[in-house]
Length: 178
Ligand code: IMP
Ligand code: MG
Image 1 (spheres, rainbow, N blue to C red):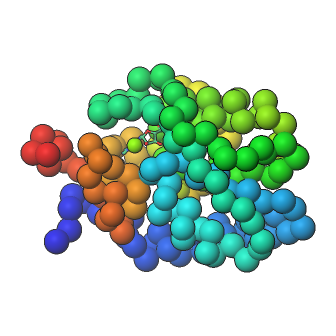
Image 2 (image 1 turned 180 degrees about the vertical axis):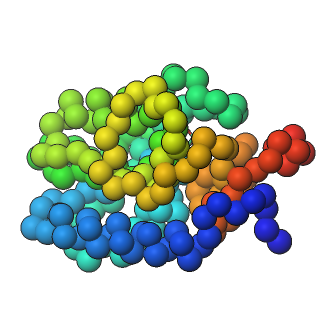
């Protein structure tokens, strides 16, 4: 059974991740790479990307709240789970599911920069086209997508659909039916 209108297939996601990982492998050779996955949306990307990067690396996770139960961002970001270790002097690569308004990442970049990492960059599977309310530079974007609400491959609606291996657009009836 397929949910919604598939926007990006499983094969397309996996092909793109292999390309991103090859770029990251080239860029981070001989550096101290720390992947920071943002829970829960980035778990799928974190697992697939990490396995495709051919370098020694470390992984850590943060959890932030941005949306609550709504489909529109509130602009309020709160750290629910912080990193386990210090990032001073390390090459941090934030792994995110999607950049919508950019407010979540903008906040994270500001707050992690204060901890003096050697470098900090962003890899986001999806970047929504349109007006980002906060300018964030994403060095490793997966796909640029229209400003529709999508689920799958880590992205949820009310906690559902994260396990779909593809990215799909939910129509309003489907959203209302949950
Ligand atoms: P931003 O702060 O508006 O950039 O929102 C980022 C966060 O909102 C992401 O990490 C997602 O958890 C959530 N989000 C934004 N757009 C979508 C969507 O289309 N589907 C599911 N979650 C989304
Ligand atoms: Mg979410």
